[in-house]
Length: 251
Image 1 (cartoon, rainbow, N blue to C red):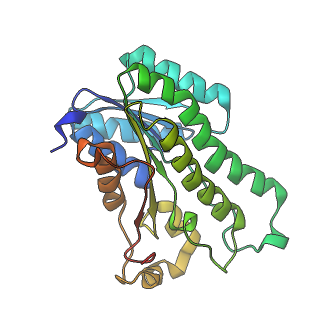
Image 2: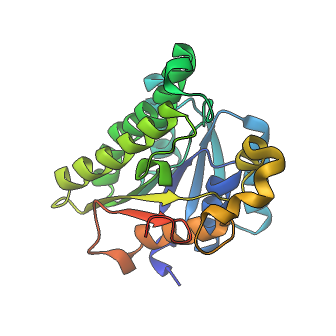
Image 3: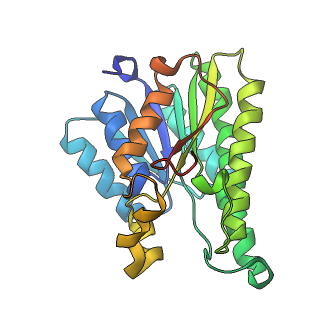
């Protein structure tokens, strides 16, 4: 399955844990050369070694996606090592302070959330699109959130704003490059079983799945399945879409 990924190059930001790690492993299993762009070197190296233990190719490049010099360097180093770039998965993101209302939200945290979640996605597309086109085209998948499609009364306006921005930016970029053999889509996961989700929800984690009509929490692998599908030839007539992966929450 997904034989088209064999020998192709995918860059995954935030690829050391959770959804990003699941994407990295599944792309590697499909034969892709995996580049993990990440700030946490220790976690990223562990993921790279796990992929290499499978007999697959992976490498780590340190980068802060909110810094243009880091992102530009990450793309240049990817091209220098592999000579091509075909797929980008914009997964890096932070939650900020989810349960703080707008009037109480700290400006510094707002700026950090927007810088990583929104500006970071833009910077990665800005510097990835030229090498992807140079490599003959490919696909970009931006990891948004159900918060990019639906607001919450529990607070966290910065996260909601950033993910709505990702959905909008996905649409505009998709239209810009629709005729250039570059498809751009987004996934909008609900509550997924990741280390970050467990940390944020704490004792409420086991109950969190109740917000989904399916009555359970999603897995990182289920999101990764959608990311690979949107990157593959099986979704060749899909661009500008934002796919909910939320157990029916958006229905």
